[in-house]
Amino acid sequence: MTTDLSIFKLIMDASLVVKIVMALLVLASLLSWTLMLVKSGAISSTQRNVAKFEERFWSGVSLNSLYEELSQKVNRRGLERIFFDGFHEYKRALNTDPGSRLSVTDSVQRAMRVAAAKEVDDLEQNLAFLATVGSTSPYVGLFGTVWGIMNSFISLGQMQQATLGVVAPGIAEALIATAIGLFAAIPAVIGYNRFSDKIDRLVVSYDNFREEFTALLERHAVAQRKAA
Image 1 (cartoon, rainbow, N blue to C red):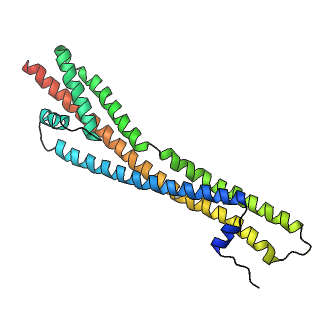
Image 2: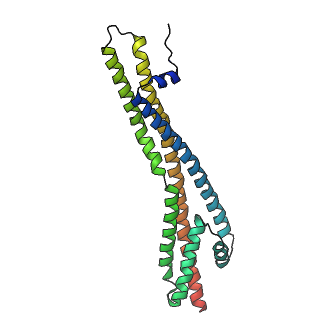
Image 3: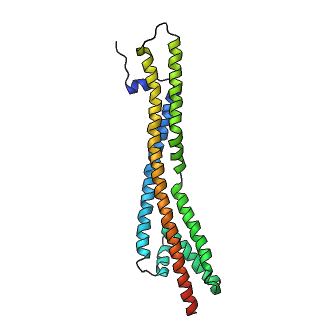
């Protein structure tokens, strides 16, 4: 007589606690993959948006024309939002106090920093979940394994004669919890590191644009002051 040691059979025969642990880990894995797919699409879209806007911005288009063009858009993202908020603050400051054209760049910088922070916050939303899954799943799986092995040894102690065939299924089903924990953790860690790196690169792009745009506005302010 042979013992059925298929994965499905071992899972179905596991204790209630181990089944709950496995179910939680599978759910965490599914949520992680769903989040990674959504986040991958959002970050890729933002990267394309940044590249497209930079090409448009440095093509020689008038700042006022670009501002008016973006004012017609309801959903401004990435550099579009940073530029629009910065130039909007620049125009407001000039209209409020025309005599302080060289100092308005401070308020422009603040406006762009706020816009950039909001963009980064949107991109980083829910990334902590991936970090949590990546760091805790192996331990949750290990808890299920320890619990399953503990039950196996308790049952073993109650038997008059123990054989490997009797002990093996209980230990095997317990080890499945650790395997599922690793299956949930590894993709989450890889996804978190990958997305964090991409977001860091976008932050660098935002910072570089802010500095370059501020310098451009300073030259623009000087030219307007001389013309006044």
